[in-house]
Image 1 (cartoon, rainbow, N blue to C red):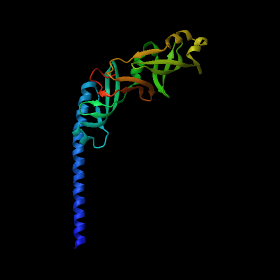
Image 2: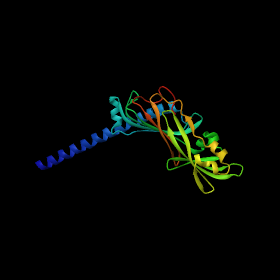
Image 3: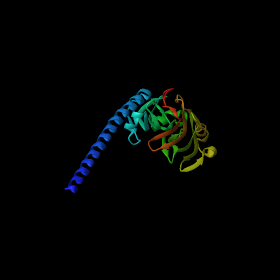
Length: 240
């Protein structure tokens, strides 16, 4: 009889624990979902994207943590953001975000499609189409009156608010040479003048956001940013 009573008590305790755990999880998910919707609404207001926005609270029990003013780590992705006459997809990762909008800093990226890159390169990309390979920018197409097929490899470098495209090698008629050694090739003077390094400003960055690197990914040119601790980006300006 005593053994049966103990077994019954254990079962009751287990049932209560399971019910309590389920209630906590349900409450956490509900609060987390509401918080994510508020984050999305704020991102939509600041970025004004033409595509969808998605937010994730990645810290365990993030929903319940918001009751104490701490959201934890937040990831926000926005598609089809229009800035500086350019369309891009933006991703931001912030650490230790509070319900008041401050964070311990983080990182972000802006991915620009190669159709946009080709258009923005101007004279450098005239007649050439942009792509990416091994992190470098690749420009391919035909140049000169003879329509010679050309492939240009360009390196990418950055400052806190600019990125520079520097052509390094050119492949013409199966021969690959450095840009500085173009003198002996047909149509070389015209091509050499066009392949000068070009610096592109990245203006309108929010306070505390700085460009850190650029690389050519399969789906577009990726600009990476650092976000300093403090108010969430966007409070003092427009996103890149």
